[in-house]
Length: 183
Image 1 (cartoon, one colour):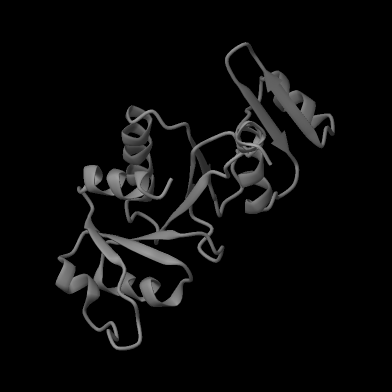
Image 2 (spheres, rainbow, N blue to C red):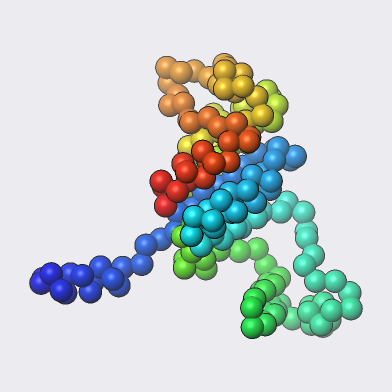
């Protein structure tokens, strides 16, 4: 293949976005962290998407809106489209992999929740009892903690466990740089 053809072929290759999960227990700071990371990554010029898992049955539309009336009438899916944004509501659960595929034009996808999925994870540790997530979840790459680094990694079997990188909950610049290197 000539250098010109190779360059054209390389131009047609679409890189997949880097996906990073932010997981932790309720009120551990996941949403605050995700919002800070979005701001930092956007400032670096990255296109960032966010997927959030909600364990409850959320409602995006409310009585009095057209979309609510459409759903009440029995529509199984609704799309709201304006010149600046689009929202899609489906009466079904969609897998994380399918959602990630739908955001393939972005540079990075931050996923809040979905603890059991197998993407690289940042684990939020607010209390000592939250540390069990570090060893019980797959693909843990880093820990964002409210505790000291020593307290966070205490009781981990350093012989059999590869220790993840540890960030303080306010180390947003370091976290953003760490993520940027993975994109």
